[in-house]
Amino acid sequence: MHTRVMTIQIHRPRTRNPKYGGVVMKYLVCLVLSLVMFWITSTAWGGDKEEVATAMQKWAEAFQADSPDPILALYDKEAVLWGTTSRTPMDDPAAIRGYFAKGISAFPIHKVTFKDPLIRIYGNIAINTGYYTFSLVIKGETKTFPARYSFTYVKRGDRWLIVDHHSSAMPKPRPAKK
Image 1 (cartoon, one colour):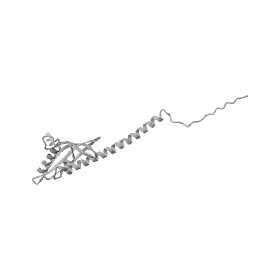
Image 2 (cartoon, rainbow, N blue to C red):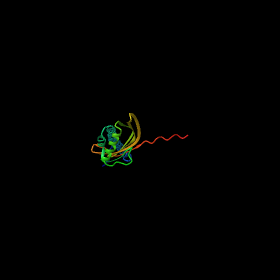
Image 3 (cartoon, rainbow, N blue to C red):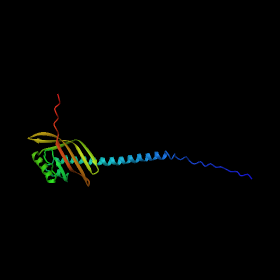
Image 4 (cartoon, rainbow, N blue to C red):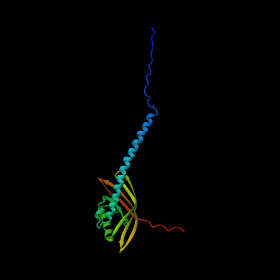
């Protein structure tokens, strides 16, 4: 009797090379996840930056008020202010209110214009630095006073409040060397 052995070859569908295919897929997944995280993070930071820019604009509007109370409301209860014309820092609400009340009484017509704000967000802390120009009417004539500023904000609930504010007069340009 003759036994015949039959060999059957089963063709499996080609699978990807486990050495390379898995690595490529891992890189693609990492790339997609990174892009999604970048988009989420930049969207959140963009929103916070806009909120801080709005807080800065509210400060400019409150600065023009006839009362120090609107501007004082933008400062945290533990805020510190080192004002442009102050020799010492103010570290409680009464001192900050007094600083602005003195300015309002001395210069009833006053405004501020911000220039080149640089806003950075670090979680619930924001720092805004740049230039601003104070315009004051003195004896019927408008005078401008450029200054540098830095505001540090903390987010309390849904509001950005000022916890540190430093302002200093802009140095006069040095004369050109001959």
